[in-house]
Image (cartoon, rainbow, N blue to C red; front, side):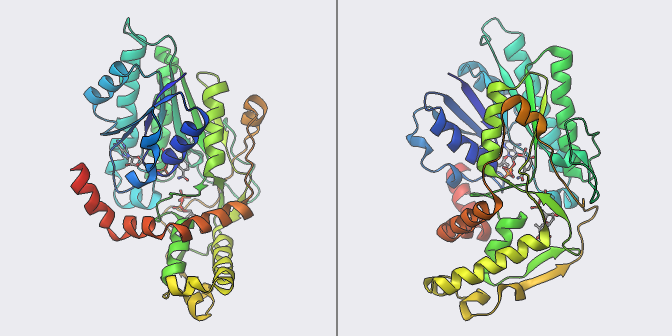
Length: 366
Ligand code: NAD
Ligand code: TYD
């Protein structure tokens, strides 16, 4: 039985992970520590309070006293570290928060873990610090370059990627220098339920439904390797259960697509769904598809992102060979499930986008 501290568990991947873990390991204890920034959302964790081992703590990973008391008082033996500032565009406009949370916050978790797990007599018999990172630390690829392996040199290009690279190095150093048991996974772009509609796929779905522009950066040729979030959660489970301390593991989706192809696919599917389900035109009257116009009419090629990485692709051979990792969701069905989820959860995305969720948060978590 594990006793987990899941940081950032109210965010997109963290919440999916908590749901996955609670379903698979119902006897485990899960303490979520989340600062509830704009990206954190208690609605993502709805229903989990029925799970006996679940607890939510509103707080900051940079709070040394709080993290120490959680690890000591609850005898936690595993940290799964998701908490981060995660959006590249925000890191271009306001990089400070990325350094504070991704670098200093991660360092605070490491030093507390070291103090509690390595230096105290009442430390749990075993421990693991699992760090969730990104393929963006490896930089950008050309069309014919081989995909990133764990041995690809780091070459982060955005403040976000640089802050994640710094955190990866700190995690590695706490293993090498102090003997903390750590693992790191570097994954490709995730998509699926509960993703904040500032990232490409949920933003395009929401804008298609509400009749807003679909802003494609540059010429739309940039390529990402899309990983369904549940496959990512399974991959992290494998790293935690079977990974070797001090090692890093790449987790990808074997699913490379150009942005413009994804946007066009979302448009085509929206048109088909509206044609098949007349109730959608009533629910989303501002969608072009509600009046039979092609959703693609909303596409607008806009100024490119500064320093925009052209291509990411993950080579997950090591994770496959050593852990048995294989993504199971194909993009066709994964995208379909994501669109269905957004259609069925209008209240969720309207609340996170129009700010009414923030008001609720301030009332309940001031
Ligand atoms: P997210 O932005 O949806 O969620 C981040 C969560 O962290 C939020 O709940 C937020 O409230 C919380 N948080 C932020 N600062 C905090 C702090 N100082 N203390 C405590 N909590 C804090 O992010 P996500 O997309 O779920 O990503 C999770 C992790 O996975 C991140 O580390 C990210 O770098 C990594 N990652 C994400 C992707 C992706 O495609 N989304 C891809 C590769 C790696
Ligand atoms: P994003 O979801 O922000 O993830 P990341 O930057 O971490 O890869 O963006 C995915 C790709 O989509 C990236 O190449 C930028 C592009 N993009 C757009 O073209 N328009 C948008 O509105 C957004 C948010 C992203």
